[in-house]
Length: 87
Image (tube, rainbow, N blue to C red; front, side, top):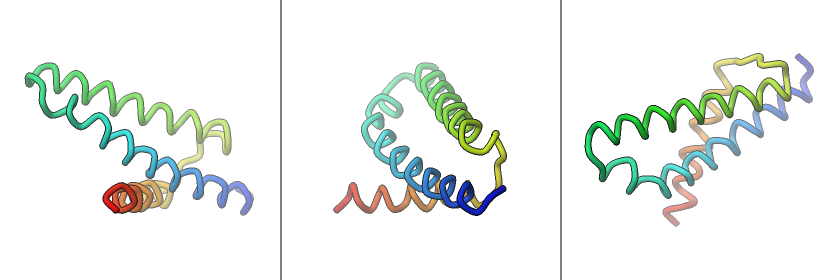
């Protein structure tokens, strides 16, 4: 994989983590203030959609190649996004 493609995927993973933090904050009341069965269904669909969307983005950029450091950048973006939302 080219260095330019890796840098592009790293930046997109970081931004995806920030967007994920924002979406989870907005959807918090729907995820955790419902009945248990409804909460399980919502969380399952949400996680499934988020994962499928990320892999579709990866497929469009680098043919779906996934490395563990992409996951670390998503987590770092998520933490950074939470800090931005809190301040």
